[in-house]
Image (cartoon, rainbow, N blue to C red; front, top):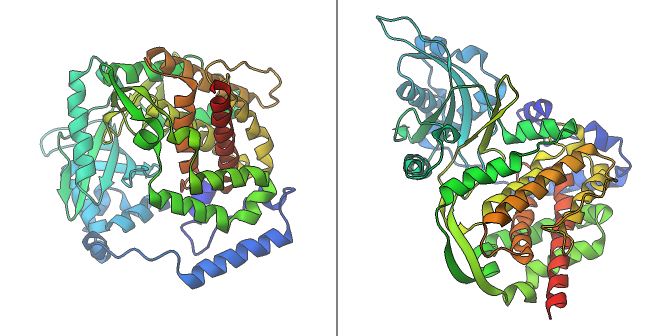
Length: 460
């Protein structure tokens, strides 16, 4: 994926993967349509420039030579340098000095957080005037133009000590409170071993067709330890927990309208229309569904970027969880449903040309069998999946669902499908999900709506 990331730093409007250009769905007509849309967006100014912050206005200042040497600024990864420029280089390097006084740092790229924070990896050597420089220690640094989100994350991390969970699953912060300077706020997580996000780890394993047996149970086991006791409440589950705000509905309808021709080439038009109708008029089944649900103090943003994996020499997995800023009392299955959405739409095929290839939708459709009525918690492996990665992903999904159902006192198939519907619709708007995957998300959401309707008919 690096070639895509590097290309976006240049003066270009987008990148066409070779597999797309050579695929069966590409045509001169479609290329003309894509270019036409690009010209219209440019002309209409649909992407407004962001005003420069105070920190960004300082970016033109010259960085002192000793600072440039300490942080090896001349040899920064282009993606890291671009992110620092967006934040404002003077304020950023001032923040790093306060985070790691008199330390040498080597930075590497990490994908930005969904919360809007910038994320960097760093190998840090500490030193002072009278002692030897320490060996390199690994940190994950989060920097945000705002203070509140990182303050909430730091406070929630401190409160983890109240939960009966091994601290190894929640990395320590170098400083208890965020460091603030020049309009920027920053925190630094300490790590004892090398690590990678679940996105990177699992995408590689699935690409190789490797099963991750036990991973789902381990993840839900960690969540269970921080969730606390059940508080049962009666709610209109869609409106009370999962309904989309008006802004999201408008953006979704606009996306479906603007990309109608493209979507209908890849997805049956009746399925696109089913999603359009749902966004416009809602669904009788969901609007009338008031029931008891199990609520706990959940993570709130349990995505594949906030789960970090390291593998020891014995091939045993160590799992760390970060970004606790969204913790709240909410429906217990939200965390697992969001992670499942990520496995299907962000993780699977990530890092390969398949991720952007519309021809790949035929393989992704195998995930639809997990949405069928009666199959949500009792999905049987067909044994005919041609793609071993699909089979491995479905096995992990089944394990996650079984594990969360075992602790959800009020769980049922409808509840889980409603949670998946919410997150699959948001996948259509997700900035780091490919266009081909977004087309599949429309079909996936349509399948959930159909299953919910079938469940209603079956119970009446």
